[in-house]
Every structure is written in C-alpha cells, then in structure tokens.
Length: 545
Image 1: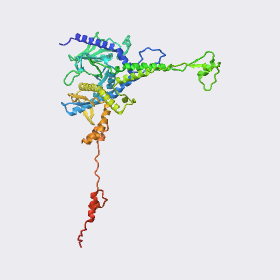
Image 2 (image 1 turned 90 degrees about the horizontal axis):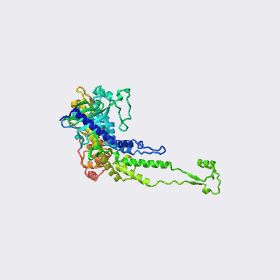
Image 3 (image 1 turned 120 degrees about the horizontal axis):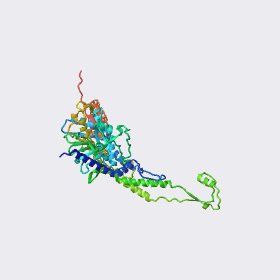
C-alpha cells in the first residue's frame, strides 16, 4: 500500500531527527579524531600561557601510511560481459578508467575520511559540461551527511538512503522554482550551528543564502523525494520515480559506501581506524608535553652566602667572562657558592613511553620498516612482517575495491542516462578512435577492480617471488616469451621491451674436407682422422696428354 504525502513527510522528519541526534552524540569523538589528525591536539584544551605544549604527528603518519599503501597506482577496473560484443567491453573499460584516473584525488580523500571517521561515502551527480564524458562529478562525503537505515545488515538491504546537505538559494530557485524559502545559514559540523551570519534585510545575494535539503531515496516504493524543512515548514520540493536505473531496471542510488571496519552487531555503523590508537597518541602527547616543560626548568642555579659577594662580583659570575678575577670577603672559599641540586626525571617515564609506542605499533598493522623506520629485525622477521602487513592491508584493499566497483557501475549507468542520442564523443582504445554512444554503454556489465587487493607491499612480495621462480619456470618448460611478458607487466616496464629482434644468421664460408683436416685437431676423433689420411697410399691418376 502506497504512502500518503503526509506519511512520507513524517517519515523523513523522523529519520532526519534521529540522524541529527546520532551524530550530535558523536560530535565530541569526531572532533577529537579530526584534531589529532590535523596535529591540533590541544586546541580545545585550556592551558596556562607559561606552559609549553608539544604535539606529535603520529595520527597523521598513521593515516597517511595506509593511504600510501592503498593507493600505489591510479584506481582502475576490468569490465566483462557475456551478453555484448568485445568492442563494447573495451570502450566501456576505457571510459571508466579514464574517468577514475581523473578523479583519483576524490577517491583518496574518501578513503582518508573512512580511516579517520567510522566510514565515508561517495556521491555521483551530473554536472553541466561541454565534454559529454565529463558530465559526472564525484565527491567524498563525511558520514554525518548520509542518512542510513541502521536496522539493515547490508547496504543492499536498506529500505531508504538519504543525502542531507545545504543548497544555495540561487540553485534551489533554478532547480525547484522561485518559492518562498526560509533562508538559513550553512552550519559547520565542528562548530556551533549559531556561528553563522544573519541575513538582516536580505543584504546578501542568493549565492550565499542556503536552504536545508534532504534527498530521500525510498527503496521500498521506488521513489525519490526532495524534502526541505525551510519551505512550508517542511514540504516536498519534488517527488518522482528514482531516475537512475540498473540494466535490469531496478532503482540505483548514486551513493557508494566505504567501510574499512564495522561494528559486528551493527554493520551499518562503521568503526574508526584512528580511534584504535587515539588513547595511546593522547598519552604520548601528554608525556612529551611534560618532558618539554621539565627540560625548560632544567637550568643551573647557585646559592651564595649573603654579604660575601657584592653586586659587581655577582655580575662577573653570571657574565661568565674567561679569566675574570672576582674578589670575595671570606677566608674559606669552600662555602662561598653551592650549586642547587636538580633531580633527574624518573626512569619510569622512559619505560612508560616505550609501552605507549608499543601499543601504537600494535594498533597499526603496518610494519615499522615499511614507513622507513630502522629496526633490528632479521631478514626472516622482515619477510614475515611484510606478509602479515600485506595480508591485513589486502583486507582493506578489498573494501576499497568493492567501493570502486560500485562507483564504476553508478558512473556507467549515469552516462547512459545523460548521453544524448546525437552525441558521439570519441575516445582512444588501443590507439584507435572509437565513438561512445549510449547504446554502447547500456549493457549488463560486471566490474572487477584491477589488481584486486593489490598494495605496494603485496606487489613487492610478488615481484620478489617471481624473480626467485624464474629458474624453476625455465626448467619446467614454460615459454620464455610468456615469462618475459609477465616480468614486463609486473615491473610496469615499457611495452617496447616485448619487441625482440631475431638475430640474423651469419654467412659461414664453406670449407673443403682437406682444409678442415689441415686445421689443428680439437678432439681425439679429429686427430685420428688426420693420422689415417697421412698414412694412406697415394693413388696415381692418369694425366691427359
């Protein structure tokens, strides 16, 4: 039974209120994670002006170490289909990979957000462009911008998905018409919502005024609702069937999720990777701050008996001039001046810092030597750690690959939706120009991330193992040309290396048997042949007159 418009509005208002409350409760945790990554750990902590504060960059290196391992190359996909011609598959593959290469920064930024926060999302939307192949834009979204059905166990089982954002009034009038909008400021999640401007008398242009919008995808009834609480105190700006469709004509939401860790009993609630080591980073910053203030107070001070030295003599002592003569009025110089003792810091600080460092390392699955840190590990230990690191990062790479495959599917379906019949953009496929038409892309394709779960560590291991197996492969009778192709592909060498010129056969002058016998013998057989020829009688031949 279909819902009424009022029931739909009530549902959207209810899930929006729950969404805002959920992320309002998590605001403090999200802000602390962000400050740790930005190396502004003590920004919200009140401190005495005389105290020194020291922050380490462990959170930044922790996150960027993962990014460097997960994005060694530009993302790409392999396309396959048994229901269309190979030419359409090649064109589709080239269209997707060219677009993914141009949007690598957005993909990396989304991955970075998924490591700092519980999860992240990618939103694909059509934009105006003279190039038909550049009419789809991708943007990484923070988790508090996407409304989820948290009762679902899988992304595909959700009853609804929504995107919560603020739209400039100028764009709202262009898309939904010139309505009487209640203009609001655009708040920031990490600042108080009241820290915005106040439009007194409508002085600001429409480009700097906003309305709150909820782009609600009702997957149960296959409907798209555009809701705004700033029109009619909560009304629908638009209502229609979900426009983006799969090849099988099922609704497709233009949002892809990226989870690197999940809460086991609530899969739609992600788990921040950075939060695993936040407490250890907190302790390390506190220790380093305490040490910095202690070192500033670790100065040489002296006690002087009053009346023995005048001000001029004390000035000479503090000046530290070489060869200075300082008169004192006393017979016993032993008691004139005494150093104020300074107590050394307890060794417990060093041991505690080592424990904190060890906890940080255990919270990270990246081996220290992969980040350039010198260790005393043996070659066997390094190999074992590299394999463990590669396997753990490989699990995260599979999550990354799944998001990339979903993005590729959404992009192609959006290209089918946006390409006009009379448009024929050209793309190069194997150095040959090919036309890209809507019917070329409108097929049942399957997408596979290229080099699935591949990371820099796993690639290094594969390269090393391939080089070690080269002699064995030759002994097994593997075609040398196939081995050469694999080596060139694995090390990303130029394809020109595959072109091997055939050696020209050198012309060898023919020799007579007598000339061959006159040469120095190199084997026992040749020596015996020469001896037999020398002992044979000469046969006289008749000479013609």
